[in-house]
Length: 342
Ligand code: GCU
Image: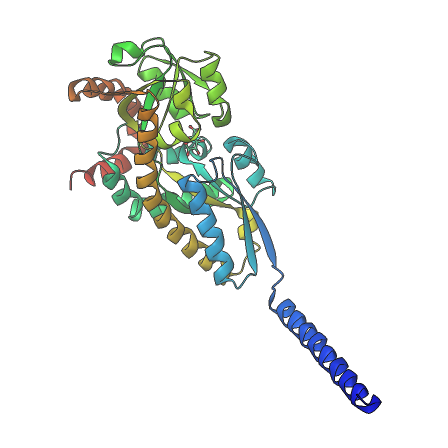
């Protein structure tokens, strides 16, 4: 092999290597150009577990917003109550600490009395009645109310119907409710309702309910099948009484100070994505609720379904709440009732 031949080969080799390095550098720069640095990074509070329907709905919302703003708006969903209890989250949203949240209406309604109407006990005949209300003019109007409290209502999520569950003894009749200590949300309406049913309401934040049941600080609690399962309350309260005393929709909200930073176009995108994510959450809800009930029943939970006659007694007992609200909100209550039985 001559020296000339060797030199040519080595020059070719070096040129090839240089070309590869150059190509890699060009690709690197090209990809870096495509990676958009977000203009906004927002926080989103959620107190449920990672695979819970509302959390998955929040994740879908964040993904849709990021996609439709070409990465300019990034929303970071923080689940499992990492950002605090719902009352703390609402407070922080007013003072600029948190941008978005999904919260139980019961908590928001504690600050905005008009909203209590939507969570009156035994108000809706079933889920489709509630959705006729929330998807219509009433739902849209009630989404505007949180503005009084520096929150922008975006959409309604499903949370099914709530039932009563106890650890030491089951509730089979209204009589059984008398004098029982039952955990309720930090909400006046929930306290009023428990008192009307003859029980003693004990306000405890969601993440502390398991411990309260375990230590017999309360005799029972109330929630939908999904939360009962997700928070493992079925391990410490084995009697689940289906009385469907209340449907409390969930609400997605944005802090007013965050909303005000956004352009009209971005606000529209956010509203549209919130509404789409709500439809997604509703489909997840139906499935999750069924599986949650199945899991509970497989874990030695006794399901007690009230007879129509007994349920009527529960409904009659809460009538005094309607009497209180009738004067101020009679028209809305009548409008909501009219949307039942269709
Ligand atoms: C439901 C709701 C939660 C709420 C909880 C409660 O699970 O989804 O947001 O905190 O009820 O009873 O506190």
